[in-house]
Length: 175
Image (cartoon, rainbow, N blue to C red):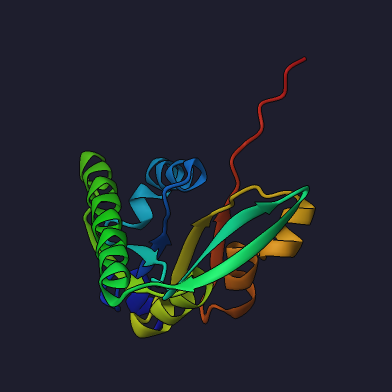
């Protein structure tokens, strides 16, 4: 079987890149196209965007002296549908831009989007599409923010059913 893979007669490996609107995702996409182009030309690069679920509650802050009170209110079904449609349009635009960037490098890209928390949506997509390598950009949150919010890349490294490559944006050292 290893011989069949080396001769190019085996199944092509599926590579998925999960992106969002951050500079870190754009940097990671460019890094992949610059450094892994030869490895990803045999089958389309799958580009994935997770759409946040539209919630039925809106929370707003009301000042009360020096303290703030937070009041959750329920939104109308029309608001939820409108918010979800806006999330979908944004995801489609982001995917189309990434697809254009890939095409400019001669790399074929297939775009996929799902609704859900990015952490679980990415890992679910890995299983659903039988991905062999997942690539993510590192957001670069500090220790405290990462501890409070969690890290999508850390979650995927621990839970994805394939190897995960996390592309960290290089820091420029000034002497």
